[in-house]
Length: 137
Ligand SMILES: [Zn+2]
Image 1 (cartoon, rainbow, N blue to C red):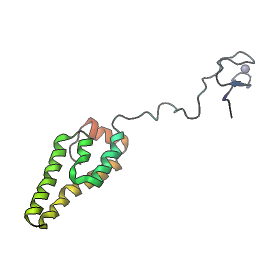
Image 2: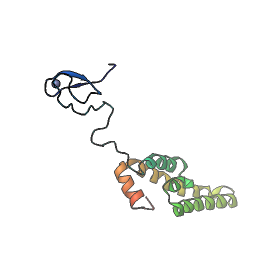
Image 3: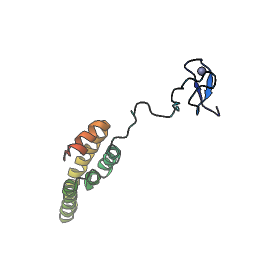
Image 4: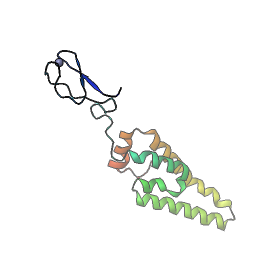
């Protein structure tokens, strides 16, 4: 297993992987592709797809703060989340905690959005939220 070998398509003899022509018959050898090399570019990274997991988890865990919106570059929507969170905080202080039920509004919205992000494929996610910039859900 120390050296990769390439089999000659002409005479079937094994040649060291770094050789470009067969040592036996001189035929051009096929390009030696290592086992870890992606075939046909199917592992090509999709720009923006790396944000899916981060935005999804932040939506689920910290939904009320709108962090997932800032991750996606939606400043305005993130500020609306923070506004809802702040309003819920003020109302819950004024009402001695009764208004704390309002925290559920941004939290549940963030939770739902986070789940939607995570259930989309990378292609759908990038198309919807990076390319088309869909602001809500
Ligand atoms: Zn050969």
